[in-house]
Image 1 (cartoon, rainbow, N blue to C red):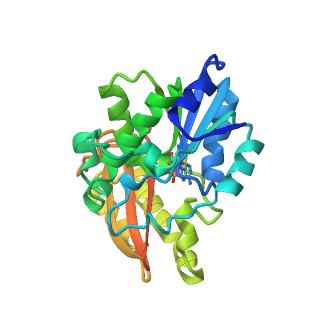
Image 2 (cartoon, protein in one colour; image 1 turned 90 degrees about the horizontal axis):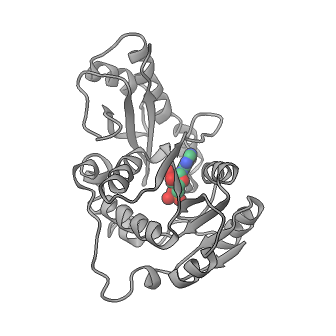
Length: 278
Ligand code: AMP
């Protein structure tokens, strides 16, 4: 496994690499969710690259960029064990040298929900991913369904900029009680951790209501809301079109139940697909 830190080293390392090349972008502090993406990339690609970069552009001024978990040495052990060929781990001034000014703006799909709560977040995500795609030139790239709006944004970017990269989305990996794995779960204390699965229960309740024939989003969401109790504080609970993130007052599968809630100073996000039934 090669670990490189600047674009020229990436290009040199990947000259003549076996194709197809799969890329898994991450912010490190790796967990089983990341490893599921890497395993799939390993299974179906001839070579695998993983990027590890905590991207300041996607954090707001009052967010957790400074305290975001960093576990570089442990990450490298896991990536080597997973059979990764190349790790790209640039530092911030390599990614954004003085004078850096270009941005990729994904438009309306990035403006609701997470985009409204975190102004500039998806522009930061779209910009860094476009840079990673340009540097690494993968044939396919792997993302988790956990960050569903990020997936919708990147589908737009890959399509609109004719990047010719296949975007592969894998299901959310969960703890046995339903909590979606996230590097930020490390922020939860014991009481918050015990309360955290309620968000997934709320989403499941929405999906069940729809499966039982409810088509009205407001009524389905109310079923979910009943699961959210103190200490959890709802930020949003809704049903959207998974491609555009436009809310669906009348639910037409395939749709997506999405939710976010505060536990103390940690904001959880999650989602569950509402599949079309035949
Ligand atoms: P991050 O390091 O949080 O930026 O995540 C890197 C990639 O891992 C993104 O595509 C995430 O959607 C994905 N990911 C994060 N958590 C999970 C999870 N619990 N299950 C599946 N994929 C995940």
